[in-house]
Amino acid sequence: DMKQTSYKKVGPFLLEMESKGIIQLGASKDGKDRCAFLAAIVKQHPDLLEFKRQLKKEVEAGDADASIIASGPDTKRKMAVVDLFIVPRHISDGLQLEKDDVMAVNAKSEERKGTGFLTKAECRTLIEGYIEKEELADTSNRGNIL
Image (cartoon, rainbow, N blue to C red):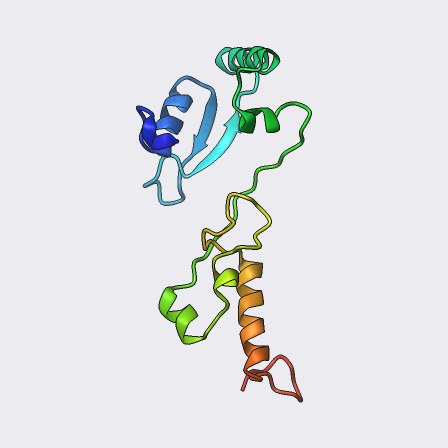
C-alpha cells in the first residue's frame, strides 16, 4: 500500500524513480503536471535488474508475496489505463438500477469487483438495460429514445 511507504502518493515515487534514471516521465500539455504519464522504462537500469534478481531469489526461496509470484516471468500480464466511472447514488436510486450492476460485482478484474468503478462499456450496458426495461426505445428507430 502506497500510503504505508515514505512516498505516501504515487507522484513523489515516480519523481524519485525518474531522478535515479529508472523511468522517464512526460509532462502534461499545459506543463503543470511533471509526471502526467510514464514515457519510458529503462529496463537495463542496474537498480531494476538487481530488484528482478532479488525477486527471483525470494520466489525460489518461497519468501515472496503470492501476488508478486502470480505476475512472475511465466505469467503474461498486460497493464492498461482506462477511464472508470461511478454512478452517483441518487442516480442509481432514482433509476432503480440493480445494485450489483452499479457496484461492478461482475467486473472482469478482481480488483474492481464490488468497488462501483465501472468501465465505459459497463455504463453503456446499464443505460441500455434501463432504456429496455422502461421501454423508452423508439420501435421504428432503435437509435432514438422517447
